[in-house]
Amino acid sequence: MSPDHPPGLDLDRLRGLLDRELPGLVSGALSGRLIEGGRSNLTYAVSDGTSRWVVRRPPLGHVLATAHDMKREHRVISALHPTAVPVPRPVLLCEDEEVLGAPFYVMEFVEGTPYRTADQLAPLGPERTRGAVLNLVDALLELHAVDPGEVGLADFGRPEGFLDRQLRRWGKQLDASRNRELAGIDELQATLGRRLPSSPAPAVVHGDYRLDNVLIGEDDRIKAILDWEMSTLGDPLTDLGLLAMYSMPLETADSPVSTTAEAPGHPDPAELIERYAARSGRDVSAVSWYTAFAWFKLAVILEGIHYRYTLGQTVGRGFDRIGDLVPVFIEHGLTTLQEG
Image (tube, rainbow, N blue to C red):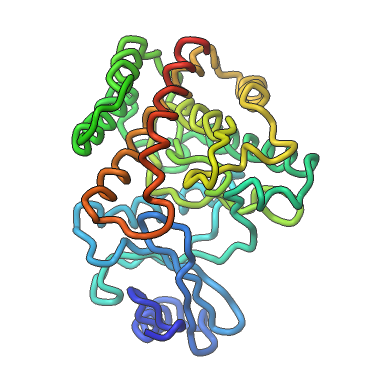
């Protein structure tokens, strides 16, 4: 495959579809490249030499269980685009698998940077870094202020029993990859279950909200929130807990997890939580539960990656160290529950 024809992206068929559905949109031969960084769905940048778009599709060799993820992602960005929430403009959803071998959607290309490491953030300097992260909180506030019913997302999820289902879901994920003793993980799961908070009014939840899932412009504002594959209607404080978790420095060498919290000027979790509480009016007194739940969820995800690595199913740099991080996440989860 040439770089202009990456696997999973048939540019001739894509061009044919766009010419049929949106005549005049494309003005020249298409080229495309895979955008690295997505962990599950594949993302490509496509250009005709004048304009640029992004194509999102499921992984290659994909099983159909989550085929409507594309439809869900397209639906949520289509619903949010007219609001104040920064999302790319949707262009087209294609459910015909004849075109690319799987359902996919096309959206506008947004210029911006997804910051994943402290080293990438460092050139901004402490003041700009602080501003960018506070803007991240403000964009989350815009998302959680959207009335799901008003944008056609009233049936986008089942908010009743949301936290209980989430905890059980991640517990099942843990059971599916158990092949070693993990001190404290059962205690963490059980304590979370015993202390389940009562959720505020439901909101559109992103599900994986952090600095490297947004594009930041040269003015340090959030240009677009990306990666909506985990989005649903549920408890908005799960997004806040995850953001708080990612705002705590891990201080582990060569971390496979985002290290932006270690950048000079990055606000601490307490400031982000306070800003969210003041501007949303939501009661955040149970935020330590949500943060501990985020540590648990990440521990389970990393243990799953470690499990696949031990089976020889994951190749690449850094996978050998992921297993060592899991106990660190468990410990942070337990400490967060004890000390808040």
